[in-house]
Amino acid sequence: MIRAWTQLNETLCTVLMLAYLYQAVFTLVGLAAKQWEKRRAARARNEAPTRRYAAIICARNEENVIADLIANLRAQDYPRELLDIYVMADNCTDDTAGTARRAGAIVYERTDHELVGKGYALDALFKKIRLEHAETHYDAFLVFDADNLVDPQFVRAMDATFEQGYDVITSYRNSKNFGANWISAAYSIWFLREARFLNYPRMLLGTNCAISGTGFLVSSRVIEQNGGWPFHLLTEDIELTMACGTTGLRIG
Image (tube, rainbow, N blue to C red; front, side, top):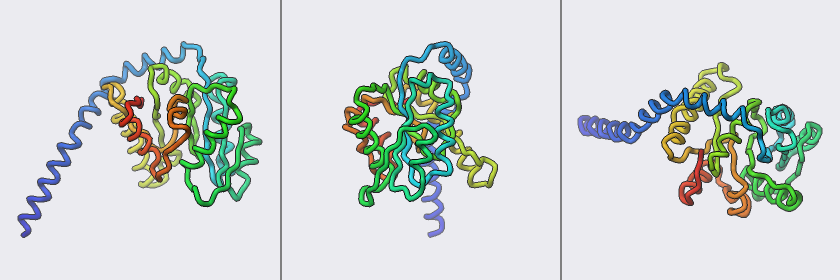
């Protein structure tokens, strides 16, 4: 019996190793493409931005952190007139809405104890923008969580990639408390690996990346085609990724 279990474990290990072996190829591609990335970034800095974006933040009881994110977005190396900031204060019992307004965002408030979750809040916010800001054309939307901090070059870098024709774009993200403990360090290393050695090589090889968590771009065309935001699972990022893969949308 012990020998049978040992053989089963060895078989499973072999199958899993073969299933994940492609990631070794991605790692090599990611390492070899570093110089190409530097040249692309240099070109992006030399091009004048023309596209207009809306930063989208859904927040529930985030008054302690949301002003920092809005300040980051207002300090982007991107023309301020081409970047609007929207906040949906979702089922809040604190002053998230007031804090966001004072920080300079366009704020809406939502109270719904049945349709609960980020997906429903995003859908409500997109519908508000479509109804009350129909005269403003946004090329794409940038989706954030309220506790994020954003690199000053974030929007410019996303704009440069969006120009290549992608419908959805993910980004590199990491933890603010990398060295706090082994759990935060492990998450941080995973985020680095996911961006640098999985998604980036996928893009170079012409396959779709995977949306993960926050800090991603969605073109306005995708929102219009879906009539809003139809992704309401707990893992709405994976749901979006699967929807893109099955409908031919490109994720960069």
